[in-house]
Length: 376
Image (cartoon, rainbow, N blue to C red; front, side, top):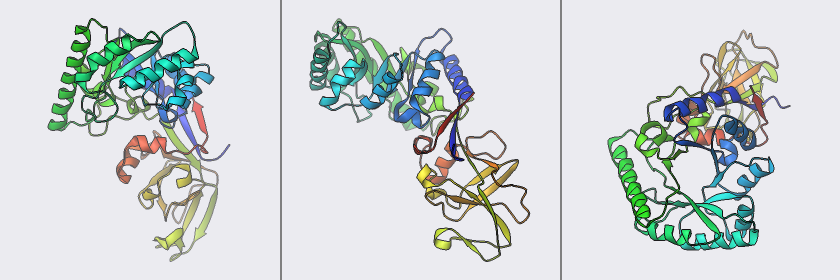
């Protein structure tokens, strides 16, 4: 086992799901969908999916057919939504695996109906109709939705099982963002009324991403699908309202301790020079593992009860910590890089703030070579 590893705290995951479920309502309505795309935001999709389902999550969601197939190969039979448009040649496998694609146009519906025929089976293949109410991404125009819904419902191979949209700025509390989110929901409500006006059921109606799950109860409908929230982080730009805990903790170890003299430099570019005789600890962790190089000179880690700065440039496979002139840290001491719960520990949101990104990118960026360890 490598010294550097991503510890996935399953107790924290269970706690987060419980908090969100209670926030949504205790009677199981709306339902809860947990996105496990991008390898469960870097946490390991099959194991996270299994735990989520044990906690009562009703749906899972992925971004690619391969991600859905990985779940099926792991023995997971729960409903799996496919958020993005697959290539035509991928659709037969998607149909065989009972993945539920988001459909946004007639051609996509016809392609999936053809794939369903080839895949065989007695049951119709479920699909969700995706509406673009203002995200400007995947989805049909609201005015096209009732006719498209009728077209899908008329295909004998398909079951019109749900209707979805996605909110663009629900993670912002700015007045114009709040107004825009409410506009999107109003457009979506109009679509649902239009579909029902054609004598059709819209199936499972869903719009709430993380931001809407926290801030827009009117957007919960039949199912919420919060993403980063379940992994422990509130929506960026919204004051935390739920006591979520980071599920991932990035750990490493001090594999070498060495003395350096005043005036000695550390790492590429000689960007850091010791102002006094001191001790350097070497961690086998770098940007090749997903620790952003942009954090060079702007990161501290927790070792034992102490907080120590990372100095010099972060390398592909290593980084260096200033342990001070009289270190109490010994070789092979464990290191918490982010996601720990000791005083002074940073989380992915703080690393994201320091690098100008979002916590999604931090957890998704932890490389495959970093083993995932599941801890109760």
